[in-house]
Every structure is written in structure tokens, then in C-alpha cells.
Image (cartoon, rainbow, N blue to C red; front, top):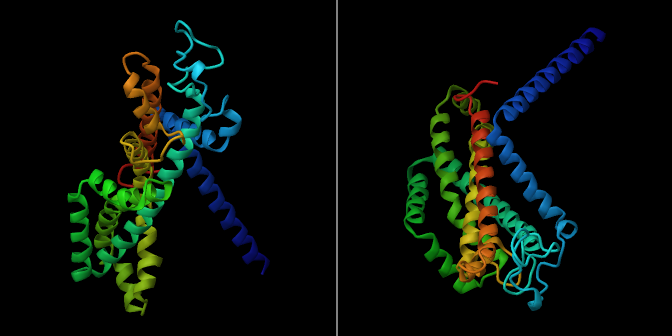
Amino acid sequence: MSILENAAKTLELLEGDRRALRLRKILRKLWQNKGAVFGLIMVLSVIICTILAPYLSPHDPIFQDVEKRLIPPLGQSGSDPHYVLGTDHLGRDIVSRLIYGARISLVVSISAVAFSGVLGTIIGLLSGFYGGKVDSVFMRLADVQLAFPFILLAIAIIAVLGPNLQNIIIVMGITGWVIYARVVRAEVLSLREKEYIMAVRALGGSNGRIIFKHLFPNVVPPCIVIVTLEMARMIIMESALSFLGLGIQPPTPTWGGMLADGRVYLYTSWWLATFPGLVIMLVVLGINLLGNWLRDILDPRLTQL
């Protein structure tokens, strides 16, 4: 009995060493990829701003002080050291509004991606596994979804339900499920005729067991990559809706709403639109770079760890 226990402990140690070696390789590849490091820094910055917004924000983001309206950022004539990036047309601090705007962007993007990811993955699994009429119905729905302009769908739904956080998440989630469904469907079509799937079916495995026990784990890596890239797209979509007045309504600070406020003052007070635009660009770029690195790590056809 002691020999078996020693053998089991040895196997556990070897497995732990393999995991540690794999983790070191992943971290080394991350450090070598400067774009991925930049992306990780941007993602962590947004998360920190979301969690610690009340402590990081120097001012109340919705407090209005008309006497301090349109104060330029530091380095400009008439700047105020208490307002590093200046104030907007209502005297609200730009830095504080950017920090609190990260909350909206992160909450909306994560919620919408989770909603669309779960829906699209389930549809892709069912469509790829069963094929036939099930596949035809879901893929025709996907074609209709792709042919329908996002802005028209957003206007229609928000006009009926109203522009609040929950409805924005629903709109963005509905428009994002197609890419998950198509990628998962393609993976399942290539996997369902594999020998191990045929063996499970021959041993009497149910369809549910085959789908969720054997097929689902194999579609997780591409889904993780899609999630990272879709988060960037969701941030842009939320900003676009807020810019058009269809997103989160004032006085709640959003990056898209700040862009919309700044377009009127673009020639006289450039900082109102410039800083929100830069933040959106840097965050989206960072998420995309991190997503590309994850794709390289998780796809065995591109790299071997």
C-alpha cells in the first residue's frame, strides 16, 4: 500500500511540475510580447478604476460648478492644478468622469459578452451536433441577424423598452451571439465524427453527455479568444449608443456620452472629446492585443507550449 501511495504522490508532484513549467512558459511568452503586456496593463487599469472609483476619483463626477466650466487641462493657459484634465461645459471634472465611465463600460461589456457567449455557444453546440433542420433554423436566424443593421435594432428595442442599463445589455447581447454560434458550430462539425465521440456513442452515451462532457470542453479555447475580442467591440458599441443618445442617460458618466458632449465644443475646448476618445482607443487596442496573444497561446496550431 505504501508503494502505491508513494507512486501516487510522485505522479502528483510530476503533474504539479508540468503545470508550473507551463505557467512559466506562458508568463515568459507574455513578457516577450510587449503588445500583450500593454493590453494586460490597460485591462487591469480599467478593472482597478471600476473597483476603486470612489477612492481614485478626485471629485464628484456629476457635481456641477458652472463657475469652473471649461477649465483647460494642465499646461494650458487658465488651467487649474485641481483639475488635471480640465472640466467640461458644466464644470464637472474630466478625470473623475473618465474613472466612473470605466464602470459603465466594464459592466456593460462583461454582461453583454456573458449573455451573448452563453446563448451563442449553446446554439452552436446544438446546431453543429444535430444538424439538419435544427442547423438550418439557427443558421438562417444568424443570417437574418447579420443582415439587420445594429443601429436600427438598437433604436427599435430601446424605443420600446427605454434607454437603461439592462436594455442596453440585452440589445448588445442579442447582436453578439452569432459569432459564437458560427465558430462553435464549425468546431463541433469537425469533432462530432471523431473516434472518441463515436466510441462514447457506441457505449451508450446520451446526446447531452456527448455535447456537454466531450464537445463543450473542446470549444472553450476559441470561445475565450472571442470573449476578449468581443469585449473590445462591446465597449465601442456602448460608446456609440451613448454618443447617439441611446445609451445610459445623463448625468451618469459614460465615455460615449462625454464624446457627445464634447463634439459641440470641439474647436474651442478640444479636451472634452479628446480625452474620452483616447481612453476608448487605448482600452480597445489593449484588449485586442491581449486577445491576439491569448489566441496564439490557446491555439495549438499556432504555438506549442
